[in-house]
Amino acid sequence: LLSEEERRLLVRQDFWNEGVLVSAVTQEGIFELTKKMASRLSSDRHKIRMFVSKENLGLAHILYEKAEVLARQDKADGSFFDLSISEKTEKMFLDELQARRCV
Image 1 (cartoon, one colour):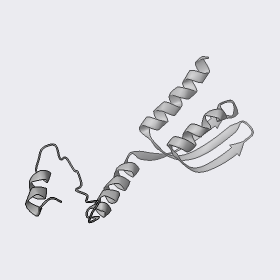
Image 2 (cartoon, helix red, strand yellow):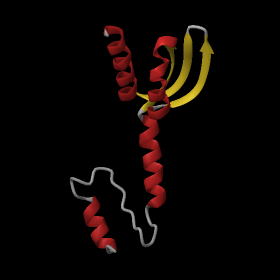
Image 3 (tube, one colour):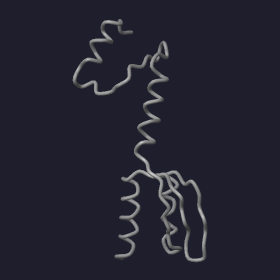
Image 4 (tube, helix red, strand yellow):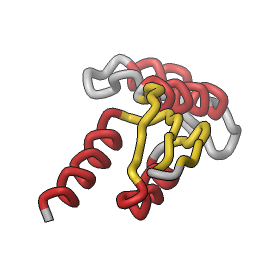
């Protein structure tokens, strides 16, 4: 375990950049770590409504695996998805759709 002085010196280092000290022994810092992780994960996402045609519903697994599907409404020609999704995942999914159109 680090002493109070060692912890103070560590967090002053340039490389630290918003890190959280955690102790597996004392559990110190666990709450702060989970709070920071939840904040980071949710801040990267935005909510959108996306239509996926029935020909492309085979790609819907990507949405279930990489995004949070908040709601799904099936229609005869495809499905509407209400999503909480990162920009990276949205771009990857749209790229996949585009690649299917080119084949």
